[in-house]
Each structure stands twice: as structure tokens, then as C-alpha cells.
Image 1 (cartoon, rainbow, N blue to C red):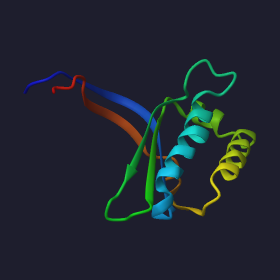
Image 2: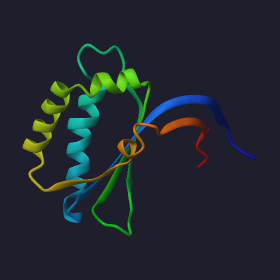
Image 3: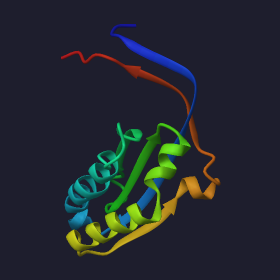
Length: 131
């Protein structure tokens, strides 16, 4: 095998998975506003010494235009809970609603369907890019 990689096992990182539906013509705007309001809003919360989540990925399915899946890997449930406080979520939701005037439907919250039981337990990642 060529290239470098890392393998980490024995983790127990909480995972949040949200699936939204927006009109296909508004997906790019949704992604921009989501990043500016939700991603940066939760990542750069005042009073937190570091970003509370390890990663956030955005997945699009070309066979389902307008479907957007967001996947967070949180550092811990405590970090996720701290960001999930109602005052923080209400403030960010109001800002998002003011900046994105189009319809957004939460289709699924996979982590809620499993009673917050989805966890990352290992990861295998490439660490360098080859041209």
C-alpha cells in the first residue's frame, strides 16, 4: 500500500446525523448560510476554549436533489450538550431563519432515532495527498 495513513480505534465519539430537504435551486445558499450561522456559530462559541466538535461533513446525494445530510462527530456528549443549550440553539435558529428565507424541512435526525446511540468507534484516514 502506498501513502501514509492513520488508524485509531477504541474511540467512543458521539455522532449527530441530520437530513434536510430544501428546494434544489437553494442548496448552495443553504450550504453557505448553514456554514456561516450553524457551523461557525457552534464552533466559535464564546466561553469555549476550543471547537466542541471534531468534524462536520456535508453530504449531497445526486440522485435526490435537495437532500442535504449533515454529520457531526462530537468530542464528547458534554460538549454536544453544552452547544445544544436552548438559548444557544434559539439564537442560532433565529439568525439562520433571518438569513435563509426558503423552506427547510428536517427529514430525519438519525441520532434521535437511536436515542443518541450512534458513536464513532474507529477511523482509518489517509494522511497525505498524492498528485
